[in-house]
Length: 422
Image (cartoon, rainbow, N blue to C red):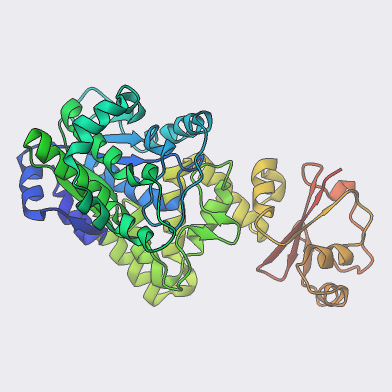
């Protein structure tokens, strides 16, 4: 087994551990069982969840047994961590649907077999739904001193404002009980999570100690931040989701491709399985040849392959090249082309008939018709990668890609689109 803690420390992903020396000793003695939980607060995991999911994956690759927990029960309650207001509760039907979708996403990152490192996937609804309110209060709740619960950051921060309901107050007990159940059922002795989960996770460590007299461990990952101050995993259009129906593979690829030079090496450590030597070479490339963006391309290709697969990566790379005149637009499938054009300035029209100049302006690719005419006159305007030199040119049905799309380009780097919706 490889020394997973050394690797995680090199990748600079560890925020907190309960006892690093004791955990290192436990890891050296043989395979341990480790779990991470993912609540269905949305129909998909997002880029932020990916950091925790990859830590869990690294533990498996290092010779340990992972458990992926999807919060079928805790998703019905809502975690107050990091929130200033009460969550809106979703119906049991919605939560069940989201649990099913997130299970599929978690499964893609873990290996399931009968060996000592074979993964397990569980929902905490399996044991929580069997527990009566009386059992919950007597068998679990009695181990939680209220003064300690009130002192937890996720609770104390809310008490200074509008407060929080008993429902959210009890969340930490439910999560702690998950650790107890997984210790009993699977011998799990390590829980992973984001740094905002520290209080909930250590509550589980304490519960296992009080009930079973056993010593277990906790490890949290660092909050991912961006050098420019904007929130990691967010775009102008919203969160970067792992579900291709919510964030297209093209948009997903572009998010990582556009990583800031100040962030890209750190992202390579957190989100890829590249070795220390490989990342050192890419770091050197950032310093020596920043315009080549080798590190960004590697990051985008690796993460897109992890989440969406090699075939999808090939499609989005082909689309990215074709949009900028380095490949055939005609060879792109309609879904990939439509997803790519959704990320650039674009116009929707009910029918063709407007001139190329009008479409350039209407798409927002240029600021005015006069600017569009100037671009055509100067030889810097393209329709489907073909230079247009006639200011009066009117695109026809023969120009449409998949009977719906036109790709506009100004110069080498500015892309726009038109979609005929009728």
